[in-house]
Every structure is written in structure tokens, then in C-alpha cells.
Length: 546
Image 1 (cartoon, rainbow, N blue to C red):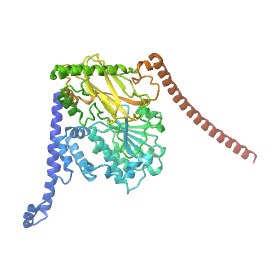
Image 2: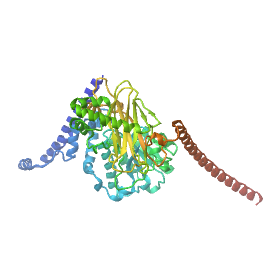
Image 3: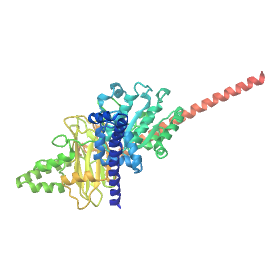
Image 4: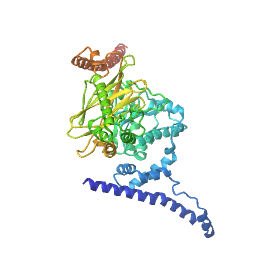
């Protein structure tokens, strides 16, 4: 069944490429050539054929036409958006490619966008929703309808979407329309329609949902029109929310305070906002290409301590390649690593995922510079009956060393991952770590080459992902590894109780704030009704006695 599906998909992709080349690239040129020749005398026709300079791909950017012939995922995204109807897909490709050339999408960079537009922060990518989709923020209050700047704003939208598409091919985004403090001058239906078209035509399959926050009642009629632009199938993607409802889609850690969140992020430029997860630093410096470098290190290092070789199963093929002296040296180095790991205090909280139990569950606690110990530990435990491959990525790869960052874990076993800031760089609360894990077949190897191939082929829906925040603790660190055992005076149970009570206190405080706000609102409503009633009674008696 799966083979038939793959064959049908391949046939549709092949047919789409062939027909687009024949009917829209070559076909457009031939039609234009025929029209020109029909208007000329016979002598002029011969001369025209000799000096014709019409470019077959003049209608499109040649780079897009070339990519269409090479990138199966790109073709498939257009096909799936048009329900695998090739005729509709071809029309969509034609419209999309013409737009891409018109706005020069392939050449867009920071210098293409006016600096003032990047500085105000009307559009940017930051954070994730509860499904792990990237958040595409549109802060409408900073947008003013102006025909002179509309093209630059469209380029800004295209710049961010193209930048994201090149990094995360096929993974959708959640559009966050922040309408708080929005005035009538910010309502620009043409701009909204362009954004809708970006996801309907130009970037198919990239839209997860549109979360509309705090929409003024004046815009109710406007968004009824937006629904017609989306079409009946995509209307369900619109989510109208208030401060309480928005947390159904995005957790408080990625919401700004005015949405009831706790995210300390404040937009600024330069540089560009960039919190995408990337490969962290290894023991020997930054990895430019994770898969290639991990393979090179295992082939060439012969006994060097590498990032990926920490589990016993991965160490075995290495030992076969080195001599007994080097083997002894390697064993001593591993013992040193183990002793260092044991010096850390194990994290207490645990995230129980379907493949791995991850500890700590939510936050990595790092010691301050004054404490002298800034390393922390992530403990992964395999709860399946198969080998689980994992890798660690971070939003600040230049800051951290992670060991190991790409390896595997045997059934029932645990792996300790040491994370440490690099070169004295400061840990930030905005930094994030991503743990990716996927179950491997029993017959699969776990060497560098096998892991590299495995991550290339594993389906996205088979990958478990879990995110961790960073936190710096100045003195006491209740649930991290950064303190030695003898520096921790409270018992583990006491620490857990304190953390639990603190969480409950914060939750109670939030609920109390909400209740106070409701009480104030009811009080104001009651006061207004009282004043209205008083005015009515006064008017009644005045009319009665007059």
C-alpha cells in the first residue's frame, strides 16, 4: 500500500514537472514567437528567426525553474495544496513563480529591506506554539496604511517566509495577528489579502493556523471578508482569541506580558531575530555541517574524544581501529568524563515522553560566574524496547558545548549529556535547547554513518521533540546538577516540595489577579448602571412635578 502511494506520488511529481516545462516555460516562448512572426512579412520572418533573443525562462526566475526540477518536496507541497490535481497545480505554480520573479524573492536579503522597517518590529519570527510550529508575528499597531511603503512591507513578509522556508523545508508556521492597541489607521485589507495569498499560493502547506489576538469590534466586518479569501477549507484555521484563550494555542513562555505570558523577549534590530535551533558547539569547536563533521571526526580522530561517541555501542567500532596504547588512553579519558559527570547533582524533574524520559523536564539551571560551576546535565532514559537515536540542538550554537549532541541510547539505558557555556559567554533566559529522538530498527547500526543516514530518512511524524529553557541561578539551585552534593543542604524531597509549592503559589496568584480584574469590571459596570438609574429617577421626578 505504501509502495503504491509512493509510486503514485512520484508519477504526479514527474507529470507536473514535464507539463510545466512544456506548457508554461517552453510553451509560453513558442506562443510569443508565433504571435510575433504572424505580424511580419516573409523577409522579416527570416531576419527575426536569426536574431530572436527571446528567453524561454524570461517569465520566471531560472533558479525557481531549476529548483522545481530537483526538489521533490517543493513540487509535492503545491500538489497537496491542490489535492493532487495537476491542472490546478500548474496554474498555482505559474502564479507563484511570476510573483517570485516580480518581487525578486531569491535575491532578498537584509539590505533589500529599509532599515527603519526592520527596526520597528512589525513582522518577525520568534517562539513556538504548543504543537512546535514557529510563530510568525505581525504586530498590527506598528503598521500604517501607506501606498509608498506597501511594496517594502510585502518584501519584508517574503524575506522572512523565504528565510524560514530555506531552513525548515515544509514545516508550517502559526501566524500571530496581534491586534492589541490597534487603531483605524492600521486597518489595511490589501496587506491582509497579500498575507493570505502568501500562504494560499506562494508558500503552500506552510500555514498551521492564524491566531488573531484582541480584535477590535470595528474589524469584525473586515475579517468576515478575510474568511471568503481563505476559502471554506481554511476558515477553520482562523482562531479568534483573548488573553485567556490565546494560551490554548501558545504556552505562556512564548507569549509577551500583554498577552498574559512570561516571555522576556523584546524585539530589537540589529541583529535579526534568530532563535532557530541549530547544532551546538562540540569539544573541538563549532560544527558547520553536523552530519559531515560527525563522520569525519570518527574516521580521522583515532582516539580523540569526539562529541558523538559517548555510548558504549558507539565506542566499540572506534576501539577496533586504535592500538592497545591508544585504547588504554581512551579508557582513562572516559573514566575522567564519567567522574566529572558524577560530580554533578542529578536533576529532579522528569519529562516522560513516548521514547525518552528527559530530566530536567523544563529548565536547564546554570550556575553564575561567581559560583565557579556553570555546567549542567541532561539525562535521557530510553523507555522503549528498541534503540533510540537522539540529537541536541540549540538556538545559540555559538554559546554552548554539548557532549554528546548526536548519538543513540540502548533499550532501558540512560545517557548523560553535559552542557556548558563556551568561552565565558553568558547564559540567557531566551536560549532554548531542543531534544530530538526517533526509534531505530533492531537491525540498524548506530555508527556515525548509520546515524547520519537515519536522520536523513526518518519521517518527521516519527520524531519526538522536547524543548528546554535556560536559567541562571545565582546562589541556591534547587533542581539542577550545577551544585556538588556537599553544597546542597536541603534534601531532594524538601527541594521538590518547595518547587511544587512555589508553582502552586504562582498559579494561585495568577487566578487571583484574574478575579480582581473581573471584580473591577463588575464594579465599574454596577457603578455605571447606578448612575444611569439615578439619572432616570431624577428625570422622572422632574417631569412629574413640572
